[in-house]
Amino acid sequence: ERYDASIDLKHFNLKRMVPRSFQSDLSGRAELHGESFKNRDLSLLFDVDISESSFDGYPIQEAHGKLHVTTDSIRFVDSFTVRYFENWLKASGKVEYSGLMDLAVEGDIPRLDRYTGKFFVKEPAGRCRLDGRIIGKTTDPAVRGTFKSDSLWLYGLYSTGVSADLDIDHFFSRPSGDITCHFDSGLAWDIPYDSIFSILRIDSGHVMIDSLFTENAYSSVSTCGDLWYEAYPSQLRLDTLRWTLFSQRFVNSGPVRVDIDSAGYIFVSSAITDGEGQFAIEGRINYDESLASSIKLENAQLAPWIQLFRDDLSVTAVASCRVNLQGDLAHPAFVADGSLDSLTYEELKLGDMSFGVRYADRK
Image (cartoon, rainbow, N blue to C red; front, side, top):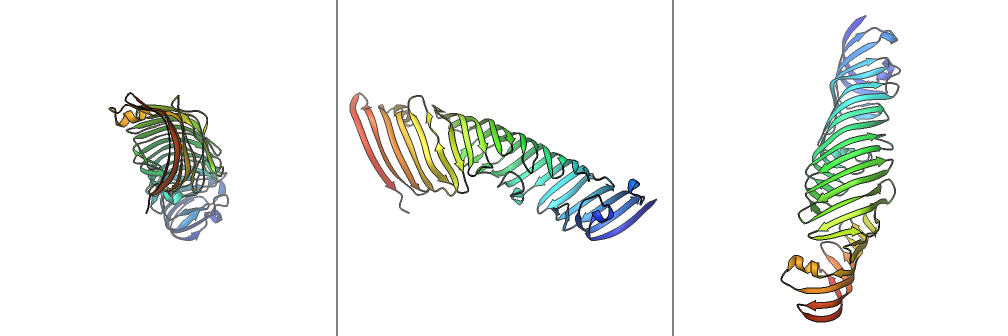
């Protein structure tokens, strides 16, 4: 038995026609080409133009394309297209009523912020293109594919070019898998960079940073460690940190730990050394650029730093100081106390010096 029909849909629930299928609320128009009324032989080919609707709990603002409905599955034919606000997804493949799916997807996403709170990245923004597969359970599938963006904001990081390979299981509940990504030029917490390359492994709220390298015109950083992003505050621990600033090289003298909460960053331990001196920052630096932190410097050789700016100036000393910071980056205030031991200028030995400085930027 074959039959055809042109249908105006208004709050149509596919589950009433095919009891094993998905709960839906569909409105729009459809051309139907069907075969058989018997359950085991039922075959319905819908060519649809859908407006404001929902399907299995997912909102649809617009959809176009062909659906092949049988008693055990729905097949999306020839890149079925769905719009959610400004964002478009094309899908082809099969979704089984038993709860399994295998879809090839392409996405053109000019507004990533529309998906805030809908997956494990909490505050995405910018635009991207997706090309990949969604496979496994409909309620918690795996995602495999590529992600490209020419404008991306992510956890205080901005990039003008991102390319990432994704291989993630349990995407909606407890994501686990691998991400390899490359960021072109941009800003990391307002600090400019030329590139970032990272290899990450995700496992249920835990990101293992296998390697991360970033550089700009005057410095480079390589590191590895762990991020527990589902804890509150989130915890970042870097086991290995190598930082080159101009010609100075630093390594961490112990695990670097930074907690991240809704207001900003809390530096718990961050000591780094150049082999002789040690530098550490403690306290808060917030997203709004307000400060409540301190910088500690111990036994640092002064000469290499002076020569970065004045190679004709012969000054040596061993510097130690503590600087307490308040205010914000635009209008800082600080109190500093420190010492310069064995201070020399040219061949003149000046001895030891101690100092205290107070500063506040008047608005």
